[in-house]
Length: 98
Image (cartoon, rainbow, N blue to C red):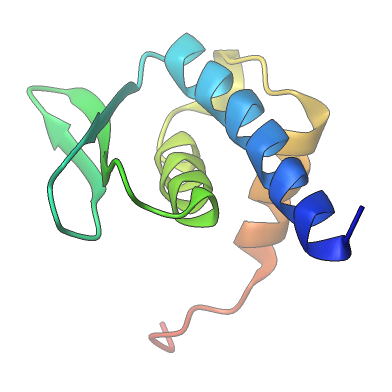
């Protein structure tokens, strides 16, 4: 198995984990033909992730992880891998310089 197909399989497994975590956190995931990049939004206090059905798996994962980072995680079970990704993301410097 090539390194690329192992990477894709790993991204698909991560997607399943992130998707389940997001749904358990009350985040709504919307996959549709939007012909746009997608994003995270809040509608009447409900956090939503919207992405194009053709979006690459790594983009879907990034959006869902971004949404999970916006919820109060004090009372939410996060699988160790998801918690690690969130902690790594928080350690990255702010590209805006803020």
